[in-house]
Length: 216
Ligand code: ADP
Ligand code: AMP
Image 1 (tube, rainbow, N blue to C red):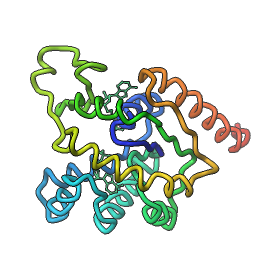
Image 2: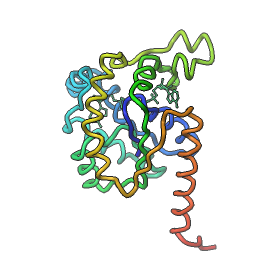
Image 3: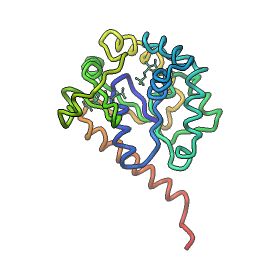
Image 4: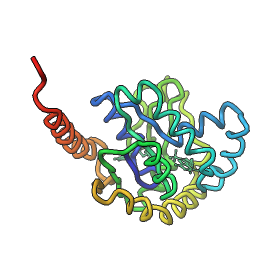
């Protein structure tokens, strides 16, 4: 699981992690934006909360995440959950479905940096890649011309999202105390990744060792 305030770099690290470890990236925010884009009743309702920077109600989010984690690719490859759980009740629900994380990574970034990151964030609708006008600018003019901005990526909205994050973070952390790793997410993205990479490699080695010698 990867957690952190809005724009702490979760999606950016997930791109790097999935590339190396071939996990299935499940981002609660992406699932919700897809629902909003398809114009379903759940999507319309979710958008009202997203506009206000508040948590979308559990009856929409919990089953959405559970269904995605239950799909064959997540079960076979393993999952990397981003932006969920965001409350104790979401964590409890996940546990009751039998989904237990091996590790809980929290990216810590000072608020003044978060605002700058949000305002400069852009997304490539073709590749899904995350850019930043200053820190990760698009590689070509063609990509630059098609970049989009999220409807909640304004200075005003991120402040609301931060209030929501700050009021829930301790509750969520209390559920994963023994497997939590806090990292300084204000470093350049490859430096953050190198720390995550060491943690995941070690975890993987332990898991392989726990399986014991493979029969010839
Ligand atoms: P989150 O998924 O936590 O909301 P993103 O990964 O989308 O955050 O990152 C938010 C913005 O900050 C993006 O524009 C991204 O390019 C930029 N960003 C992410 N990590 C870093 C970093 N370590 N240093 C500078 N900018 C970053
Ligand atoms: P994100 O893409 O993670 O920044 O999330 C964007 C918005 O989607 C948040 O501000 C919330 O309104 C909503 N959202 C994302 N994840 C959750 C979640 N686990 N529970 C409730 N709402 C969520």
